[in-house]
Length: 119
Image (cartoon, rainbow, N blue to C red; front, side, top):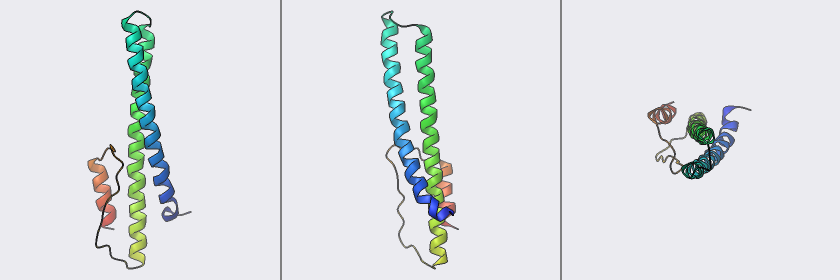
């Protein structure tokens, strides 16, 4: 299977990972908040509080990785689409990028999008 065939499903999978990892991060935030409240009234330990903080850090890291993977998958799709269009001598006169609300848009992502368009 070549990039052109894999790219659409990779974008779909990556988008689902973004949503799932965002939900996991939100859950970890709620768990930490609950653990902090228990700690404040003496019903939890420092160990458990630190464990919840570590879980939140891991969830945040996973969310950022999912967002990065989505950006890469989208760039691959755009690169594959551009190659297909060039092969058929098609010209794009209008362009609009897709975006997931809240998705981290980095300078590297923008460069990848524009470098894929110039190929």
